[in-house]
Amino acid sequence: GEDSCYELNALEMLIPALFETNAISELEPLVVRYRKAAEAESRRGCFCHDELKSRYFSALLHEAHGKPQDAASEVRALLDLLHNNRAAVQDMQGPCEQLLSEARMHLKILDPEIGEKELIKAVTLNLAKLRMG
View 1 (cartoon, one colour):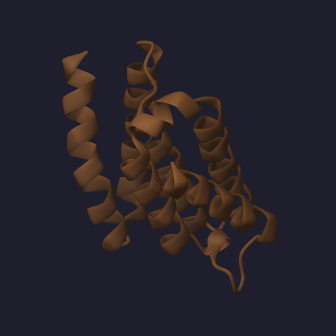
View 2: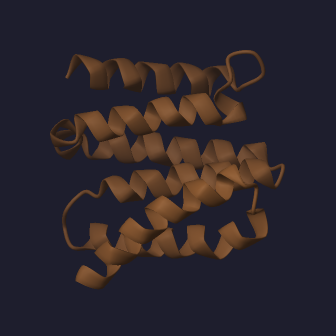
């Protein structure tokens, strides 16, 4: 309930700060907690932007551990969530667009020079759809 909402808000601020300081060992349990709290919110019957963000955080963590395939799986899961919750995504167009833009900027697997071409194309397409409304 309210507890998972507070936890999500606190972790949402803490996790990016830890990524910036490269505190990878401290991040792992927090990213797992964030995912569980986000999934708990989603089980209440409403699509939760935090579940998308948990996929993004997990992708960043996989990249930090040198696991680009696992990071790519997280991005695919994020895109599936967007696709499967289209109506709800329309209500949160701005935050979803911001999250995809952030992912494109920070994930190596989405880097146009060295990234996975099909995944880059899928993210770019979803970003364009969000921008068009």
